[in-house]
Every structure is written in structure tokens, then in C-alpha cells.
Length: 228
Image (tube, rainbow, N blue to C red; front, side, top):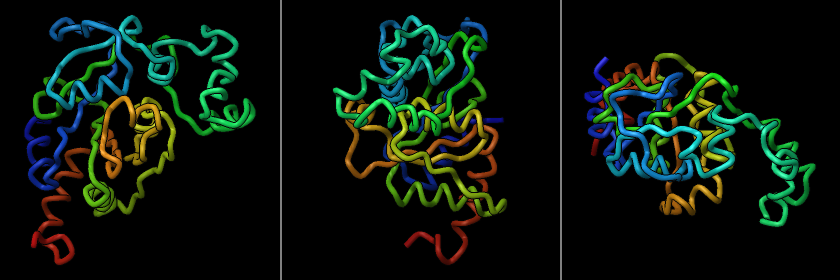
């Protein structure tokens, strides 16, 4: 499958301002891709890839507890008690109390630890691998069209992910569920990524991208989606 070409078509149909990001989990560290040169947060890695960088990251290069945990690079049991309980989030104003943190985590998705050793990132139009997930930062209208294209031939609805951390909502969730996901990102990610207030996020399982791009093309011939 030519994902580079699919990426170009996606940009053509939606007129995206930000390049979609191809994400892939790897059991072994890739031999033909450069390793990230410094620690960064998962959300920052997305920004790097949108900017054209191609790299892979291991636990050593992950600067955020969430990025490591949700992407399956570290077991939650290995963290200190205040992280496991979520107590550290309360003084920061993310939750009112530990009970709220624990309830929230019941709705969060993570990849089981001990399987993957690296996560690969690349702009979709330059990715030389078949992505597991494609992340997109887009406008509400563009997001709506992606969701319509997903439902166009399948009748399937996307999955809303609230304000869950992007490493969970926009990466682990579409990987584990196989569903198109959409959300707004969490407050920390939006600040770290320095994105516009109007931007939303949509992630598509790699296996669904050919169908969605094909549907976008066909939808362009229909009344509601014709370009003005």
C-alpha cells in the first residue's frame, strides 16, 4: 500500500494545514530509521513529525509518564505510589481529588507493557512503513469530513475521546480498538504542542486509511461535499 500517495490525497481533499503523522509500534528497534536524539514528550514527538522529522523513540527518549505508560513502554507498577494513585495531578489542578483521577483512568486506553520497545514517527507523505495509526491535527470541518468518510460505506461511528491525554486518546485508543477516534487533546498536550484554540484531533487506524481516502474522493462528487 502506498501510504505516501494516500497522504498526498488526504491533503488534497481536506486541504490540511498540518501534515498527518504516521505512527508505528515496533517490537525491535528499527535499523533503517534514526533514533530520537533527546528526550521529549509524546505530544512533542507528534509536533516534530508534523514538522517533517522521521525518527523512532524508546523509553529512554520519553520524557512523560503518560507517553511511556499509554504507549506500552513502561508498566504502571514501576512508577512511584503518587503516580500510580494520580495524587500528583491534584495540586496541578487536573483533578479535584484522587478518586476523580482513578475514575478517569477507567476510561483511558493503554497498550500492554512488555510487547514493544520502540515507537516510530514520520510525516505520512514520507513514511517508509505501514503505519498502525495516522494522527491528524485539523479544523472541526476537516474532522467532520473524516468522520463522514469513515461512515460513508460502513455506517460506523467514530469514538469520542474527551480530554484524555493524547498518548492514550490519539494513539493507544485507535490502536487497541481499531476505531477512528476524535477529541480535543488534554490541556498539557495542547500547551506543549502550541496549537490553535480551534484545532481538534482525529486518529485513524492505518488499515482504514485507504477506504477513508477513497470515500473522501467519491464524496467530492456528491451534493453536500462538492467544493464551492
